[in-house]
Length: 356
Image (cartoon, rainbow, N blue to C red; front, side, top):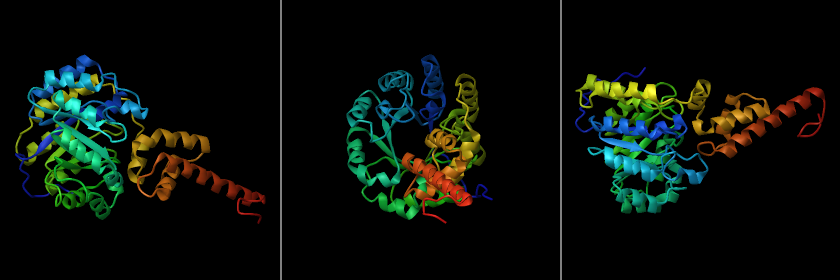
């Protein structure tokens, strides 16, 4: 059992990044009350939080991917942030598939100081030019390695060979909410030898997001993410008010955990989060399936009359890296074929492999 180590944790070099109004957008189907957004950002502006991430959870221009648009577009987000976050560094999320760097440049011209570029580790080599060009248009570019745990550490390091040291930092991302503190230590220790700033973004499927964030700090990460009340995609994120509280217990109250606790309650009352399917969150975490695929798994489970966990497990066996939609569909068909073969074998009918 992991326990927080006896080593001293000093908070003076630690940054907490609040992504309530980015990752939290998933939980409200990307629809916000603008007055609430302004009020919350005004209150966050009065806290010691260092960085604030806002906008569509999937990233700038996410609607190009077919996902639902946020009711507040990225330029409106920048307008609100510039008028309210007078004491904070603020940024947005981007994905190379649909986020145009011209748009990132325009947002930076409007006051955005950082962008976090997200992709799975195996897609980094094909996007080296995008990452480099991003550093030309934005002051701070963080590379977020989505689904980090699906790639073994040694493989991950080789995939990062071409990444420029000009990026502001590298993030280990526990997208499945499946990592344990020992895993966090392993990944952070490995990448910090090559990048000067390491961040950690945890999800809470197995209830480990907070302790994993502290483990990341122990291992050398200097930025950790959190959301107020832990609100976020799927099972949610590390609760930033709890992280502030833990750091107070371990060192000093640098982030004003009392004020953040009040804001967490404000979010609990005012952000009507879509209920999560707890079964799917736990299954996905342990088996290794991202929450973005849960609806497809449920559809395939009903269509093929099989257990969701079975589809997930077969998809993981099929996939070369983290499973895709195609892997899910192939898994469901494979299960159905096997079921038909067993049925025909028992009945004496010809099977897919011939007759008995």
